[in-house]
Picture 1 (cartoon, one colour):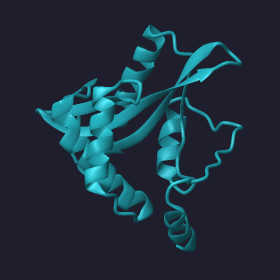
Picture 2: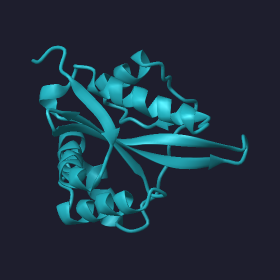
Picture 3: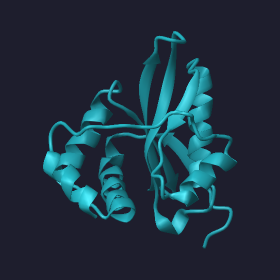
Picture 4: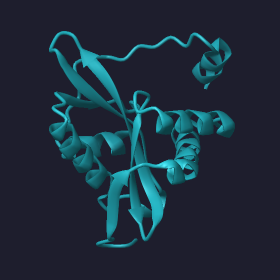
Length: 165
């Protein structure tokens, strides 16, 4: 394991698309045992790169190599008349985990959020991913009082397959 690696956190750009797509397909397999359609993920990542209303990527780079990424999406709170940012699609390649990469990405997001007058930063984590939950807590986040619900309107068969696992 490397110590004191010199990485930088920057906004994602078109040259990062292939890495981000790989990160997302790796994360889905690693966390849920699910093989994503790489072509569909490429279209999704590319769409966000072209349209910030869909998402903004932040990437970690080490010696010119993209080693981690996350995506920010926005939510408007009519209750508070303020914007919230959601952190999604967090991934750090295994050889660079536990070396402060996510911590640095999170700090960059916090700084950008403050600069943009964002009220809250939120994220959701898999209930069984205790390691990630521990990282988020160490960085000052806390479990919300909200539960998350969803209904898949496009692929009901996928939900049934996942539910059977």
